[in-house]
Image (cartoon, helix red, strand yellow):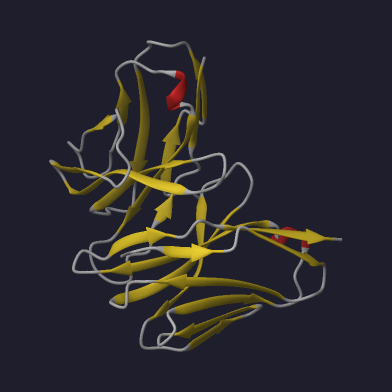
Length: 111
Length: 113
């Protein structure tokens, strides 16, 4: 199976940390990604992690990968109203690096 | 700054019309994709291509067709639009090698009356 699951909705207060979680089923995943979609726009890549890593940090973003549990998380520190968007967890696996999208988590930041 | 362009951004048409959604990329990517996005957010892959003259159907059955005559161009056509085709259509492209990062266009929002 190639399912990627996420909770649908997360609400946080401005300035708090946000943690968006994802579970995937394909243990052969080579890359795992987080994409962001703002209202009325296409998706943009936020960050990605290679499967042999367990953590990656990029400014306010921290990605944690637990390969044993097939769990990926995205932490956004000091969440701002501009972070309000839909966040997609994505895995790539197989010889053709087939990409599978999660259901998306809508992050609402309350001022 | 977009390197992948979709036109039109918004289209409202009547049932039975033929429409073509255009997608062009300037990055020389071999792989290109069309996704259909529900109002409830989930993306469904409807077509993909690994290069010129290569097209494949995706995970979600679609009445649309695609062509890939040039590397940079991957248009999607609906011969006879119906209200059930109302959706957001997202085009994307990626390299053949490396991390397979997808670059997305801004999307085409289609409404069929």
